[in-house]
Structure formats: C-alpha cells, structure tokens
Image 1 (tube, rainbow, N blue to C red):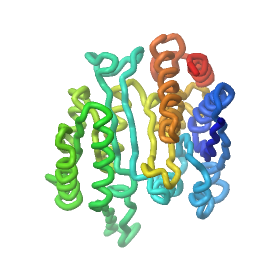
Image 2: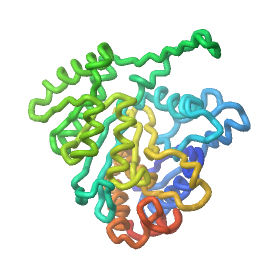
Image 3: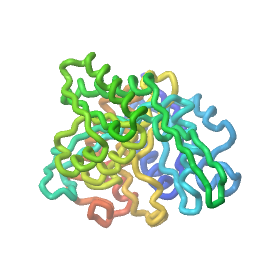
Length: 354
C-alpha cells in the first residue's frame, strides 16, 4: 500500500535554492524505489519575492501551508535586506502560526569529518539541542521612542511563560529517555531575574517527574565554554530561543561544518505541519557557485521523514550521508574537498540502501 505526503517547498535564498534542489532529487529517488509518493508544491517566497512585492511572502501566506503534511525550507537571507525583515517576514510567522515550539537540532561528529577540536574522535560529540522556538527573546515585542534622534530608545521584551517552558522541557526529558538520560538546562538567571528564574523553577519542577534522568543547569557563558572544552559531556540540552540559537552554531562548527547541521521546527502533537530547514543560512558569498554542501538539507529531510512516521527511512537517509563522509572520496569545500553540490548529492543517492 502506497503512502502519500504533501510537502510545501520554500527554496528561499542563496544556497537554499541549490541544496533544496539536490534534496528534492534525493527524495524523488526515494519515491522511485519505495511505495512512498511525494506531492511537492513550491512557494516562491523569500528575498526575490520581497524585491518584487515588498514582503517576504504574500499576505496571510502562512495560512496556505495548513494543507500540507510538512514544510521543507532551504535558507532565507540577502545582504541587501536587513535580517529582521527576512526573519519576521517569513520564518517566525510560520513557526508561531503552526505552534512549532520545538527546534530540534542534532550535532554529531561523524567518522570521516575532522573537528577543529583536535582531540575529538568520531562519535565523541553527539548532542541534541532543543531550543524553545516561539517565545523567549525572539517574541518581537518592544518598540522605539524618539526614533532617529540623539535620545532614541529601543525596548526589546523577552517573553517566558510557564506553559512554554514546561512543554519544551518535557519534550527534552522524553527525548533523553531514548538516549542517555541526561538533560542540561541553559540559563542566565544570575543576570535576568524574571524570565530566566521562571525557566529555572520550571526546569526543577519538570525534572521531578523524571527521577532517573541526570540533570544539570549551566549559565549560557559557561555552556559556551564547555561546548568547546568538553562537548562530550552533553547529550540533550534545552535552551531558550536565543541561547539555543547561539549554542547550535557552536555545535555545528565543533562537529565539522554548518553544512552538516540539520534542524526541525516541530509541532509535536502533529495537529499542524512542522517545518524542516537546515541550521545554516543562505551563504551569499558562495551562492551560485555550485559548491554548497547539501548534506545538512538532506539530513533535514531525514528528520522530516522521522516526524512523518518513517523512522527506518530516516535512519537510512542518515546512514547514506555517513557512508559518503566515511569514504572521504566525495566532499564539498567546507569539509576539505573540492566536489560540487551535485556531485555530493549524487554520491549520497548512490549510497542510499533502500
């Protein structure tokens, strides 16, 4: 019996268009070899759409995505558009509208990949950062007074709710039960005496429901140091929107490259579509050169398939990337090779064992 998935595709900007193309080729190969059918529908939203229409996506565009099982996105960002426009004009409205309150970001040091941390061996770094994805520091609440004068004032408000903290922490503890039963919470309550103290209290409350899970709480500055100094001690890390954003870029780099960093914006109860996009940005400096690493986007497709109820296929997708990395024959420039985006994508297809 065939299974059918409706996927909304937003290629976005820069290398996003290139790595999504490669990933769609990869998924089309899966369709030919299995009983899975993909119905892809592309939306032309992003920076080019902004240049033509003055907005990143059409009015109420996020509502059109409700008809789809998942949203598959490349990258968003353009050097001629301020980042707050691209973020608040496309990504954040989708995350909030579909209550994608979990940002799930794995970072693994795969065999065949060299970490900039010289003493780290393959498999020694295996972290999942669970980032709160709909509130916190990215709540976009605030304003300006006396704008464009010497007395200008800007106010930016972070929003932390008990419900928001509880659900991201419960997800993290449940995830830890499938791994090594360790959860580290990231805080800054010594300086942020309201939102972060609520975060700490909720973490303590939730941890009582999981007496067999080892817990730790670290200040964000200490956590950044330990991600470099002893990353192998981390397993599941739960963090606020801003702190999770920072830590996942560090995690991507210590495991070889942002070109390997997959990511998922998840609505865990699956009543609304989730959105799958790699951690990396649009990389305008290499866009159009055909050298972007498609592995992060392809690994992200694996997260999508796992969320759609295809865990075995997800495992095979990750394994195909792992084999290419381990062979060290075909690789993009970001991890020390000279192969093109297409050559890397083809190599992954050739190693996919369906």
